[in-house]
Length: 312
Picture 1 (cartoon, rainbow, N blue to C red):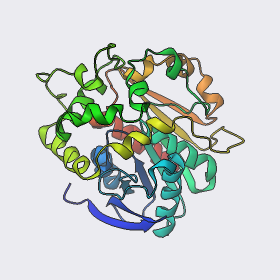
Picture 2 (picture 1 turned 90 degrees about the vertical axis):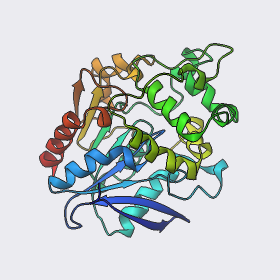
Picture 3 (picture 1 turned 180 degrees about the vertical axis):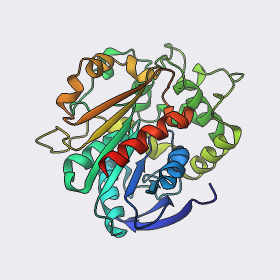
């Protein structure tokens, strides 16, 4: 971890925090986090790909961690993160990148690849496949207490989170998302109440890790990170051809609760996913959960490095 260098770049009217390791002349891998994550969620992968001869850059997306918030939250969307990725690599004089993303970060990675295919050598995503844009089935087919439905409601999550300190909020989400069941609250229950205070952290997530996350969310708060992703799910991108033709690897933890979202497992296992990613490889990790890159870095890292070397 001491080898990771931290810097800030000023792009698109905001100052963004980057963590970096590896030789500047090496092929570049850009890591994009989800929620409730930050650059730190890629720590194991950054060190591994740098040791394999690549340059690793992990950003705090705008509104997250040490990066500035968006100037106008009402206009904040995934497209801003896409624009930020482009501006970051332009500012660093990087022509092409591998892009690695998970959870909510995959939407930015997919849109970036579709808009700028010649800037992307390959795409690696964890957990969430590239699906048609538009309103997803889970918004209407899962109950009112489904966590995304609750968090899409302005002010609801803020009030729920506000009852607790930041570290407890992050702790609860990590525990909740590490389970294999979709987080759904009962009618008279808030999402934070799903997790009992006595529940231990996952064995692969330490108190030191929790403190690292909490320190950055103390700085950024949760308001912007609830807006993107949860409150812009139906954002439109003006993309005519939604098929990703770049080489792509999808890594699936088979115990990730996301597989239980309506239609998702069938979409992947039926092969329909390849209608939207024409050069796609899929790898399954039987015991992997939602945070598979933190849970099993010893399994995820070789898959990533093999893909990078294959397409470098």
